[in-house]
Image (cartoon, rainbow, N blue to C red):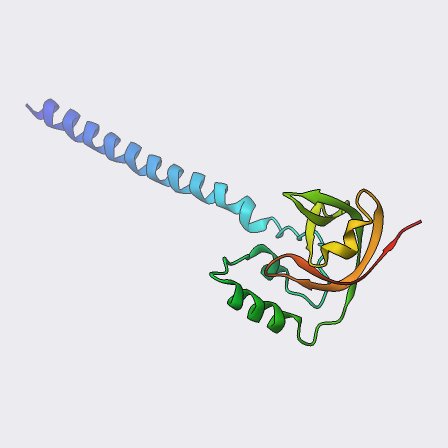
Length: 147
């Protein structure tokens, strides 16, 4: 009977030892899997073609505009105090509308003055105007071909 109790105590001690080692090894695995992330410096974001005075976050957020009157209010508020910028690319037709395709950013910008852009379809141009970030539309002031 004495030998049985000794063996039982020894088995219980070994089981508890294995469990303790297993949980500490598990904790070390979790720490080591977290360490590379903690020691790795954060990656820098690539620069975008967004003009510096416009918030890049606004380009990603394109809220749906319920009606045209609110859309016009938003555009006029966004355009206040904003200087005209130059955009280069190729005028193309997308979904029945003329757009400016920027080959660098691979973005398409809607052109608000379809009549001015019509004679430049398929050509490389420089468009001067103000970009409405909410609708991704350039308020065209002028268009000229790039030679």
